Length: 338
Image (cartoon, one colour):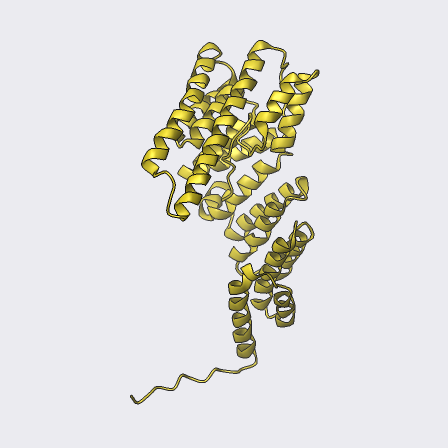
């Protein structure tokens, strides 16, 4: 299941270059508009930002910037350590862990201090919850998200984050409930639709009980949610492939729909690597549906060496299925007398 758990500003969504952007936004003439535009660009979610001239709001935004700066630095340490470890060097985990804890502790203290002075600041509790979740203090994160939800019941981000938690830890039915409420509050947010689609697809038995529908109807519901999300975020290639790959789990295979989904993903692929990956998926669907000529054509279009092993396997599967369809049975292996 794709669940967004990266750094956040008001929402538990991925953010890039947020520190620089927030500092620039704080210096802008029209600060509320600048900050709102920044968050929309960074997260893909439109949010209403209070007056950034308010001292509390300025302090809150600086807190987010501190959080983001610390997380980026820690992420870099981890990446560097992994790269060095691959070469047989680098800091051991026993040394790196306390270094990370020491870097993040001032951020934790800053959140606690802010919330002690401003206990009803819902967005700060939401951000603090994301911070805690990122450092794997999940139960404490849930406490903060629940407080954020209670303080601002119309904020869908808290509901989405809680649903993410229940989708991982259970009970799964609470995830359905919370995603549904988030979508009611923000029906045009594709992330919430995608999250519910993924959870519905993965936990089909729970979905059948929760929605009181059969398995094929569960598939239909998940696919429709994916389609709605993709309609709102039309150039999102990973989302398009999530939709297309969902057809692998449906029996009998809906060949025409699956190929249409992969063709839609192909149109928004960003480079040859993504395009050739789609060709392999299309070939897989086609060879399993008896469309052997089409499968061979797509396999012939794959030339990148990174796909060589997978292409070889699919070519072998294609030959076996063609021979079987023609009634050709491979000769049994000859046993040696020795």
